[in-house]
Amino acid sequence: MNDETRDTGESAAQRRPRQERGRRRVDEILDAAESLIVEVGATACSVQELARRAGSSVGSMYHFFPTKDAIFDALRVRYAAEGHAMAAEIHAQAAEWARLPFSEFVDRMLALMTDFMARTPAYVVLNSMESGPAIKDAAAHVAVGEALMALLSARDPSASRADCSRRVEVLMVIGDGIVSQLGRAASTERPRYMDELRRAILGYLGTYEEAQQ
Image 1 (cartoon, rainbow, N blue to C red):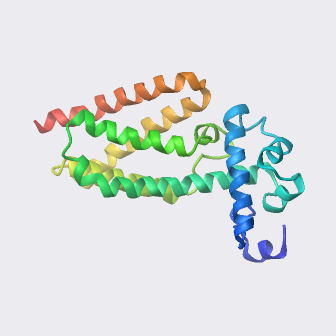
Image 2: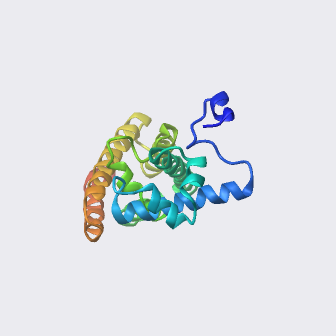
């Protein structure tokens, strides 16, 4: 850990190199970490193999990340940024999606989650770890929740903010439960759990759709 890190109180996982070459090296390490975590799991992910895949020396890796957990935390920061991007996409599409047929409306929401997981391949594995959630930034969770509230409000203008808030809480509990299961399931089983998630959301939100008719 250098003097700059001690003075600012930032962790090595949060400290971004100022030079473009260093930023590229960090991204290469994180990309390699994602790939290795997906293949062998977080526990079996060795620094030596990670360095080999990143085309780096172990010493060079330690310059950016003093521990393996620091790499995991940096991935969580990356995933938080993806969470904010997903929230922005929901806000941008809320008015259009609110007018879709119900099943298509649900499919658009699930497509966002599927796309998110495609961009964050180690997300479900890190989410299953006891050391911390896959998204470390609470603000990202809040942003996604607020975006979903705006989406449900556009879908059901008669619902109060409190009504939408409760529905979002339930949806996020359902989603978190499925994601936790995905982290423990074989990759071949994950599409089936996504199908179950679709059924759960269709069944839950469908009761409110029926009430509006």
